[in-house]
Image (cartoon, rainbow, N blue to C red; front, side, top):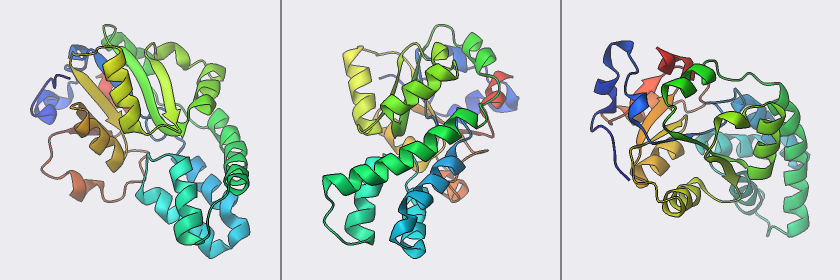
Length: 233
């Protein structure tokens, strides 16, 4: 996979996002990037685990926020093994997932969508667009179809239970994508996954829950924007 620029931020200096059209592959995270849904997920994690005690539910939320972009399957397994300290069984995991999914679907159908998707798509007509998310894949496809957002993502919509690293590797290898690639995300894990895949990265901070972003990204080669609409200049 070919990186377009060594210093992505310098390419976008002066507020002109004129480099976007150079990418052959653009990957978007969903929560906090395309949808204002981070708070939806955070509240759903808390409510799903509240029957185990408010302290345990808050511990799950804290773990979730520290590990933005990571699959719910991994988070609930951690909740049972490391917070509750019990051996997880299939029925218990499925019960947690079911409660979580039910609450999340309602929120995802009503939360705000990022401004500028149409304009941004016009600026990168040559590129394949993908969603690569920690959210459940079938749930994402259902929501994106219902909200008519799937029309933007001609490369596909992918999510858990596979990890982002697994999805990126599969997408890149199966489609033999060797052009310039960009990941647009809102978490530390998004940046790390993009780096391992050899992709450039833009951090979207406006809806992010990554509170340590400023210190973490200091000195790193990337661009930081408030929202996707900033890329439409």
